Image 1: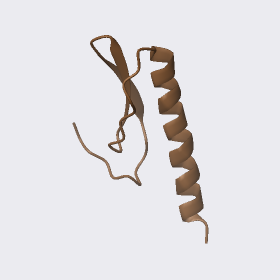
Image 2 (image 1 turned 135 degrees about the vertical axis):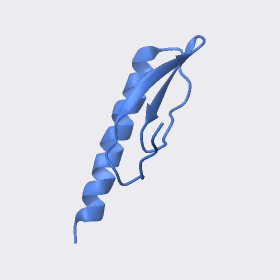
Image 3 (image 1 turned 90 degrees about the horizontal axis):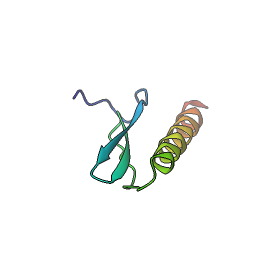
Length: 61
């Protein structure tokens, strides 16, 4: 898989490993293993929100 920098666009996915679901991002971030797919998706959404907020703050003078 092609790695992107932490400042590049963020695209999240969820994957399953046994009975656990994990959220992953193209920036290299990985959420904790969850038994709930919904919780893994919520982790991914939270990551995107945090990443967008951090990038917005970094781009402001």
